[in-house]
Length: 342
Ligand code: 3EB
Image (cartoon, rainbow, N blue to C red; front, side, top):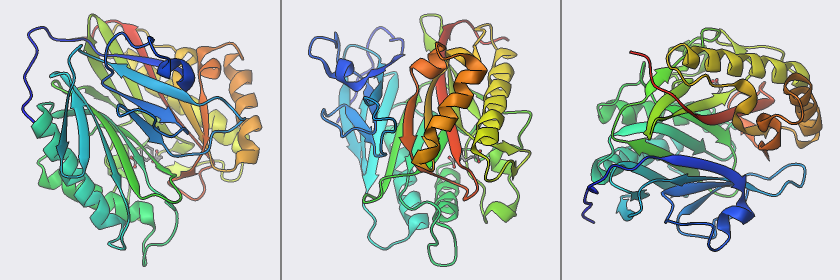
């Protein structure tokens, strides 16, 4: 489909709310660019599901991304995408047919980069990756490690950096009966990649974590237009340097994850005037063992206060995490007015 660029550039915005209110007729003054429903099936063409069980019998939350008033849709191979001419949101849901995760990831990402071309939005801001049985062996190599090989290969083949400037991302073990599910957000300007000084950059992890490192930055700082900056924080866990710390201790892993999130927020704040606040983040909290979720919430509430946006808007999902010894992972976003510093 041919895509025209609208005469007026549109700002991007994001709204975290219970899915039910997001879906309410009349709540949408304009067609959304896309949305992620955490733990609920997708009921609308613009809504994509994150296939993971919701914890605490919580009402499913959703992130609704709104851009320009006119949305065009298209397909590039296995990718379905939507664009307003300035921003693009895409989804890939690939069943597994025994080809292996490396090959599946390579196909998915090759199509993803084609979609960026077709939609006219070359710069990735954020990618969400979900693959079932992430920690299982896939013929001599853990499935997550196979995924990393195919992903990195596709980035290189498409001429995208696999180091500094990689997009923000998460990778979770979910969709037990599905295949590989990827969602992505892209735009016409490259975001500023943010790293965490407490952690080795993931793309520099040593080969003890797999033959090829993961391809993501710790966060992306993106100008949404209309004077707004978004901080999109990748999946963050209890890793210091490149090592998992506090194996087996869910409370300490949660505290370490908070220290890492605080460090990323601080690193972003040094690069912009927005003054992002840890307590104001909109988060998704992935917990490996559902029974540990109350302890995670307790630790978060003790650190930030039960009334903090972080606690009030959090979506808690059960998912496997990309290292066997990680019990919790938290991803987040925030929007605030400000500018990137020169
Ligand atoms: C970590 O810090 C935890 O492979 O895209 C976090 C965010 C993690 C993204 C990815 C993996 C990914 O290494 C795991």
